[in-house]
Length: 400
Image 1 (cartoon, rainbow, N blue to C red):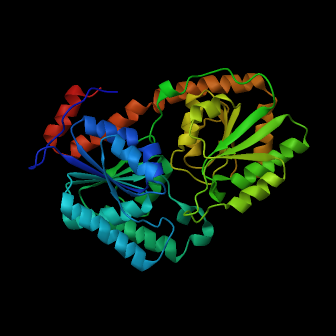
Image 2 (tube, rainbow, N blue to C red):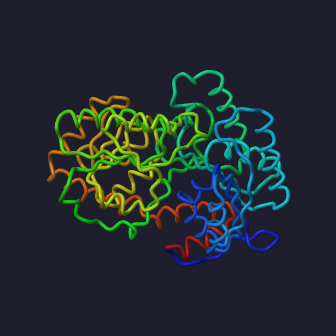
Image 3 (tube, helix red, strand yellow):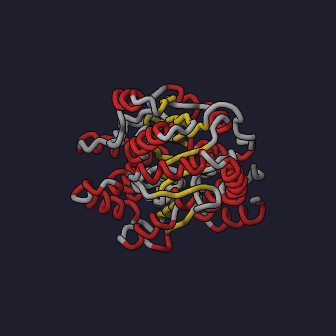
């Protein structure tokens, strides 16, 4: 990682950075390396989120970061619960007075963004990791979406606010809808991938062709379309093993249940592995990565597939089409179309040379565009700019 440095300081000494995130496991998976790099740069780093397991908080503390738990219902709309969450966030900001906040996902962006305006936090960074189920599901295009857009505007109105987008489609939507000003938006390619952790290995040369969908078990990840395409592959007599690798997420409104997963497995077409901690090992044991999502920010699963040198089949939707270049490192199909998904998967199942070529190109894309150090440096540059001219000058002189 790049050389350590000290950014601009506030009146109390070292600058402080407070992350607000929905849940600990997501923070640890997507933002922990950034938080550790910020600490190495001289920031006093705090992490504020809910947890589903005590080990999530232990991981954060073990990294030398300060952890604060708040109770946050990601899918809940109970006004009293949300008011309590907002009050908890406001109390933390009033107590610690951070130099910067970095807010990740919808509720933290709204609640922490509005609270930061009240407290007058110097710099507020909001990371849009995707538009979420309210914007994906056309049935939710009414009052809920309008309220969310209004709250986003209130959160992002401050001159101190910057908004990080992972793809141009989401950025354009926020600007055209009047939610964010173009001058406050920044494009940063996701959370990056540690290339050294993903050694490119030859695909397995024995047994069936393994296809994996690595994601939370949500309807809008295309899990049911994947299961339907897997059944068509089996019925066509192709030698495949189709795997679902990811946790249940009952707090998400689009969640599939354990009984839903049992029914999908009962067809014999798919196998659900649950949460898989060792993703590099998972991808090394597979031939193809599939993500038939309805919409994404910039899916880490596909960036990891590129790093592992595995070809991809994904949907031609924002986020997925930013990672997958048609015919180069993968194939793109329409969303919610199991038949088209089956045809694309069948093409890769039957063409080993195409899989190999796409894997090579994918690794190069990961190296060129999604390397973890590069993504971290873009974030740290933004931190430095918001801590003042001295901090920005220091990064320009010593950052790698």
